[in-house]
Image (cartoon, rainbow, N blue to C red; front, side, top):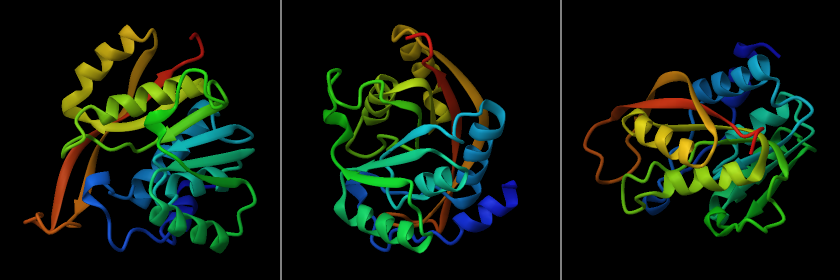
Length: 211
């Protein structure tokens, strides 16, 4: 599938009508999602035929894109039942047979959990921890590393790059910045005073094949 075709499909994915500020629910834009997934598949071969996990899947844009690119199976995890309801409807609209949605708190996964090293690839756009969830981005990242045999692909604020790189080294994995992006966030909450805000974001890959 060509990049523009993938982005066109992802533009049809329904997103939050009433996002929850405490969960930092910002949907991954079709443009960013398409470029992420296309890179993961075409550069690294980590989607087609692979078992993929999407942590904090929200309305399912990354999960759906993964399925469209031919994942063997994609599991989307999210704590929010409302988000999963939207994601489920999206999967029905796309007539997907290779996507399963699971309601759970990713942060409660343990090293002995059934999902430990269960996936070939983990993809995610985790909460950045900018409101009342400081450190949640690193927690998601650590859980993701424990769940994959190959690699984690994730979005993180560029301002946290050096700290995340340091933590990755402590965890015994190698982090690579694949691209520097501008995440254009539309005003979604009452406290937003601007119509849109650009946030500098890193698209990273963590190689977990040696851990």
